[in-house]
Image (cartoon, rainbow, N blue to C red):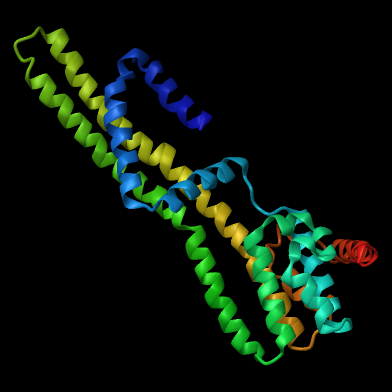
Length: 285
């Protein structure tokens, strides 16, 4: 944003332009006010609120880090070990009330993500029941992950639609400015030129807001949300491998391999993290 504003405004000033000419507050009110009103009309309040959260996450670059992946693999390893060695009622205590579970409390980053926590618990509960076959669970997981991704990207689509509308709103503001200028044809060329220049600022603002501000923010929201959705893929691949007979440590490798190579923790880091966290969870239990 600093580079964008610096180059656009700096280049304008280098050409001999004056910044005070660009300061047309009523053009801003027309364009941004109309865009905001359309945004509220087109989207339910839940999406409006989530869009604010999504933009904050985008600016903070709130994507999963290595520790997030390690904690996710750690909680899955602990749960799979419990599923193999503990009776059903003891395992159910962890998945029925994860906030009070010693396993989930050992991995606070996972527990903080309520949607992901419930996703894990729901499929662990299905594993405990034991009637469903792996390919049926896989199909159900795929459908739920598709729904989760669709919901997470609603804010992206809302922001992108608003960005797409900015150029047209800029033209609307420019037309209103020209209408105002037409009413002053009997004025001096200096006054008329100023009115026409103010009208053209509306076109500039609409295009600039679309392609240099809101559009890039929407794209960043999409990147961040898609990366967070990858956590569900890790859970899916890990639990499916366990259901197909893999040992917990082997099943973790199925999940680890779904992480981007740039962000993927090493095998040694996963082993050290799961062993240490597993020991702490066992002591707490």
